[in-house]
Length: 305
Length: 159
Image (cartoon, rainbow over all chains, first blue to last red; front, side, top):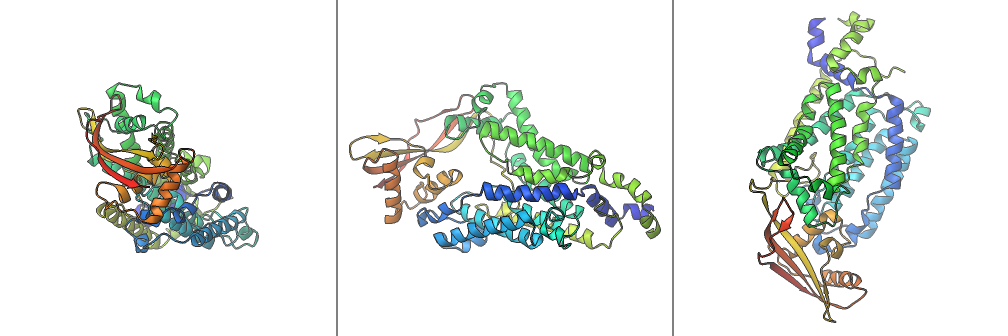
């Protein structure tokens, strides 16, 4: 029992179990995500309408393009995205559709990022492929009706948790290396001052926040930002803490939107799937411990030991 | 409904997880080593360096001034002049094509595009030129005041 309980394989299984999503909630997320894509699609068309001289793709596969794509090609990409979104909405071929949809979102984003600036919505773009493997077609879908939908997978959600934690960690590390933790330097206040000086795009609380003069407050915001982004990766193994961290992040994103006007509302999808476990599992602090009892109660597991 | 039956499995999922983590780290290293930032990579914005301890912060400001044939001029935000480009990319695009380090050469297509936008920003008035003033300056983070005494590095496009 002890060797089995502590083996890497069982630890992974128990963590996967701790992140196991409720199939109905995950499937509703699929429907809402598809509706979001259909109702609020990112505009790709401008890519083909601005002068080609501005085209400056980032390193990577898009650097192979010498010119922006033709308008017809961009329009086709948008049509394909819409068709895939409808297929996702009704749950037809959900897994391949999800994979294809992520590919289309990445291609579309890559084109819009080819004008000198990479925006950071990669988690939104990767969301369909991970959720496809997590089984978001399990309910309320043609696949489910045809009995071709698989079960939901906590393992896929575990990998998604690692991905999200890693992505946030990648935002914290540069901050730690460039003075955000220096008690004498106020980074958040600095970025807010830029928005106040150039007020073309502000959050609704920008001016009010900027009126706060206490250095201790601003330093606390810097520390909180680095902590909120940096610790998540390390608590993937403790699902309760991970979920608390995600809730903190939601507050962080809301604060960023209200003060800096940067909208990460679409990331609600990204984070929501961590809260689809049964309520009793949501509040258990440790995936391994939480599943010990279940392990003991499961005859098939006892036999396998 | 019980979606999952917990049972011990082979090490495949462990190795899959280890491989996945290795991939994340590897692509992350590439992402931070390669300049400018590549895409696609799993990464969130690190923003950048914190201001100095004395409360000032060096940055490059961009002011745009459009002159018209009737002698008038306006100073729109760069995102207004380059409104066809996504807001977050407008300044970067201007820097790429018209910044201090760029050649500043503007082809007829771009000139015509800028001409149309400049006219639209001033009720159809005929634009004559647009100046892009790049100023390496400092901002005081306590009151958001910008030092405008620093001379501009100006790129002018005749429209």
